[in-house]
Image (cartoon, rainbow over all chains, first blue to last red; front, side, top):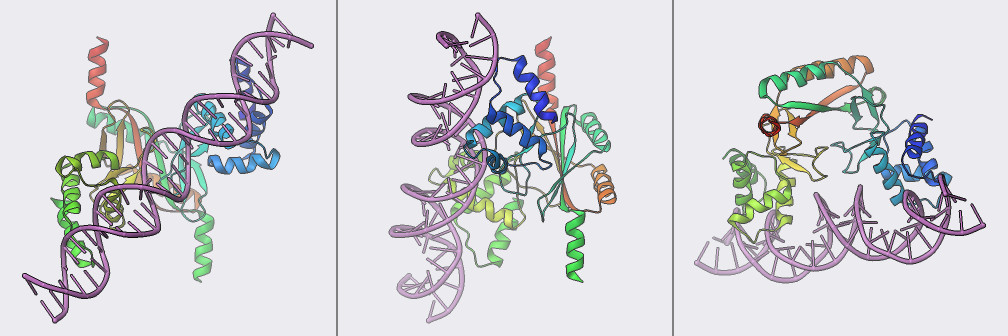
Length: 149
Length: 149
DNA sequence: TCCTTATTGCAAATCATTTGCAACTATCAT
DNA sequence: ATGATAGTTGCAAATGATTTGCAATAAGGA
């Protein structure tokens, strides 16, 4: 309900139009707690309206990205498909489970220290950082232990 | 000379063959201090032998990747082409300049703390981490300042 | 309701990478 | 050296992800 609302506001503010397709895509994105690929999102969206086309998904996603309402990321494990993160604004980081491909968001202030140290050592200016941890999520880890006896 | 040597060793160890194409690709990769895309590497390689084909580049790169001698990464700025990092073994992190697209490697022990904290909070097991900082490198930053007066 | 122009679905294009295949060639045994 | 075997190459076509051109459609304001 959050993304939809904000997107709606911005659509009205510019000279864009709210279409049923867009509404469904936004609502689906809101209801989702994962970071879907375009294809995955299409699947969900088509449960509501099967005539919606993949290119409409992409166009909506790209607009949301330009508005800063979602972030597109390619994780280094799971194929080369972009995953779309309907992220709360503000930097946050990700853990990707190599077993079930779940994406877990987290935050950690130490990243700021890493940025500061890099700036200090190199004279660069750091604008933002991406941290992705890969491994086994708690559930998969338990499952693995149980299985192994 | 490092990658070449190591690759040579492993080629002999398995039942593979050292071809002139492979030798040129390995030597080019050794001489390079950047993280090239397959296409960029092809350009350099073709300065030596213009008949070498992109698919040979990919095949060699994928073999090196499987051997752990290079890492393929997709950074989130610079389009969706993979960049191949003839990395020293061991985890290290990257800074990507959004202006000149230079890739600078760095290390920082705080990443271990971030991993440990995440494991503690979630029960997950973290196998490795990726940190990519984006911004302006020292040179581009200076250039920008000079330009701005 | 009508007009203007944003938006859609579809097909074709594009970009990055992979794969099938016939020709070629390292490498090893002779 | 010579030949046989099987790894390797170049090329073209296939694949997967995403983008784009376009004619038809439909919001949203006048």
